[in-house]
Length: 192
View (cartoon, helix red, strand yellow):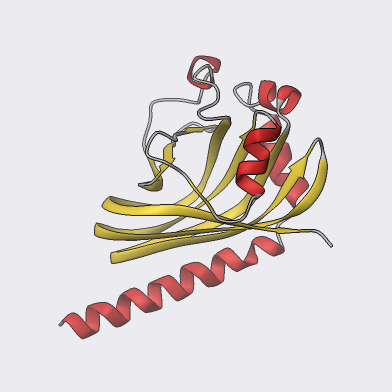
């Protein structure tokens, strides 16, 4: 039974990671355009030092879970490198989902912290969903989405930056039940 569950989890994760790898085919400018349409996000585009864009993050699990996504990092509108998001969880969880994610850097210090190599969100980091029907949170618990009554508002975005970063998530699809422990980690590879 444990062996079957383990192999089912591995197959689920392989499918999720394979789907997330299609993020390379996604158009980064299309993803940015989705976020720019949100009243809650527009002020961040005007004032942020930089941002990271992950067009598709695939997430799945059955007891053991994970998420993966590839993105680009921008400083003052110019692509400076690529980033990978990796998350591993353990606990009660079942299902799979896909979402896009943007992380805004308030200033050079926050940008440098994110691009300095390996970066991990702390427990205080949270995210605001930009579409009706989704609410999300990112932190050492990772990113998760669930139901909500309506779209993100300027009031929600008013929470602003946390340690120089603000995170927004746009749910794309899927369903995930989760009460798990894990971490969301990022790597950065500068352009050559």
